Length: 107
Image 1 (cartoon, rainbow, N blue to C red):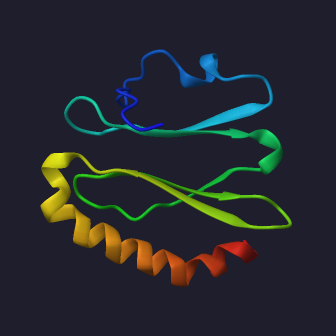
Image 2 (cartoon, rainbow, N blue to C red):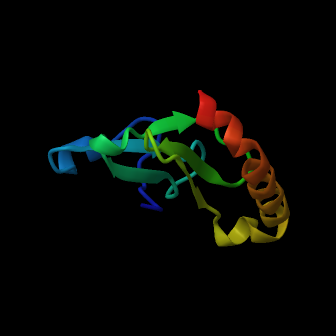
């Protein structure tokens, strides 16, 4: 989910809208209005939050899913006003994560 419009102060908890057997992981927008990203994942996938790269102007959520077969998921919202400045940094971060993700497989 992108554009959750839920800031750090909260709002309607996404967990209240979540079906049984699922969990919500949310990264609110820290400044301004709008923004924020969330993932609703099945609990059986064992979603685990991993620190995401901090990119000015982006909200990002990085997850590790699965136990036997590992999957990394990066959800990022990049507002149109930040594309020119933040996109190069975002692409660099994605490339770095592709190289680094195997280390998270062991933890």
